[in-house]
Length: 168
Image 1 (tube, rainbow, N blue to C red):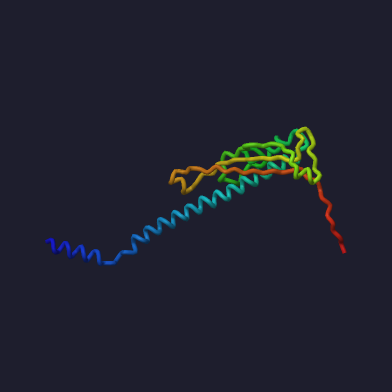
Image 2 (tube, rainbow, N blue to C red; image 1 turned 90 degrees about the vertical axis):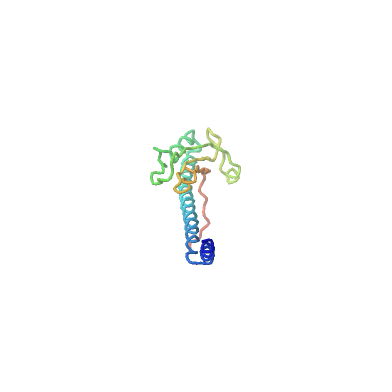
């Protein structure tokens, strides 16, 4: 009986049929893992740009009112928070959008362009930082349930610059 067991074991070790099956299974797991990573990172990329657009809108709206005391409240009303003019209604991936910080500033680079720091805030620019959470799809299985995204934006009051154009 021992002879038959040894012969069967040797035949099984030499037999190469079905060798590809474990490799296919391992590579499918690797490819599915990479695909899920790409989907989650791509979704985070899209959500970040949506949050950045909402933050830019808030900063631009605040910069328009920078010489008045309503600059920060105008920026907040155009932010990406729920119930505001800049709320990301078409951005289903963003949740809990909030303004982390908003302030008025006097930027020396803007003063060098001839735009003074005036008004009750003595400022010529508005800076807004927003944050939002984004749920994950596949990384959730590893234990990461959501990503937190931050988007900063700074906008300044400007003045029209004449163009040097000649029509012939």
